[in-house]
Amino acid sequence: MSTAVELAIETAKRAPRRRSLTLAIGCVLVGIIVVIAVVSLFYLPYPPSDTSGSRLAPPSPQHWAGTDKLGRDLLTQLMIGARIALTVGIGSVALGAALGVTIGVIVSFATRWLDDTLSALLDVLIAFPTLLLAMLIVAARGASLDSAILAIGVAMSAIVARLTRILGKRVLSQDYVTAARVSGTGRFGIVFLHLLPNIWPTLVVNLALQFGLAVLAEASLSYLGLGAPPPNASWGRILQEAQGTVLVAPVGAIAPGVLLVILVVGINLVADGLRDVGDPTRRRRR
Image 1 (tube, rainbow, N blue to C red):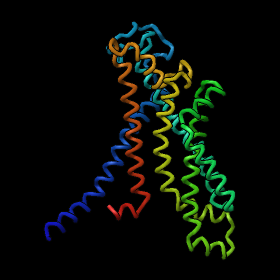
Image 2: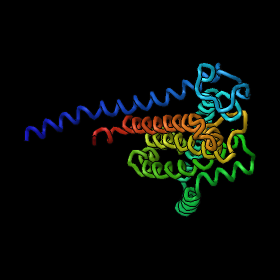
Image 3: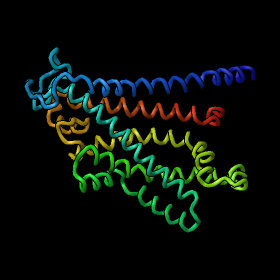
Image 4: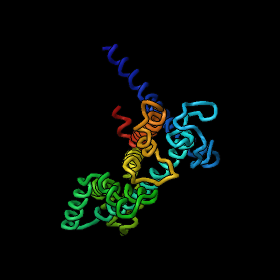
């Protein structure tokens, strides 16, 4: 019995350290991509459209990651791709959060029939494939970085709205909210004093996960030729251009894939860490 108790105590002591390690590793992985993106704003090894290098050259002191099939420096393309990935991720998450939280809060206060109607509409939008919806929006507006952000943000907003509605309904059913209403607190006061402060931990975790999905969606759109046009170098477009020469110059296909994995895995680890930080009940259960 004493051995089991000691084991349980030791496990409880290690849990916070594991959670801290998860968050730290996630921040380091994301930080690598952030540093690359920030550096690209001030320094690039070569101009993005410079084709003076040898075609499909291997890594060398002149071109650290080699060149692509047009003779462009691959490291330059990868650095620009990091900037595009973060720009699309931040922009689409901000747009999806603004639309989704607003709609979700409105639905939380809606009457029964309006709640059922809007909830059914959200379910239809969620069931619609995100990438297909994004492709339709981009095809209608034309391929550009703004179109990619708009398309992914709109597709994301339905998921955020549904989650906000579920969490909002749960908060509005609590006794302290009923007491606030009886005391004369208006809807805006309830939203900003009670609803949003109580649902933000779960929302932040979900938005962090949506960030990773947005990065993957942008890479998919660029791979299909619906992302940011040249000379912008999205990781998805680099992959698409390198697929025909993967045996001759594998760095062009491997490097953007590795960077995508680093960013997405890092975001997922950060989301898991934020879940533990923002949810005290989860910390107690572990």
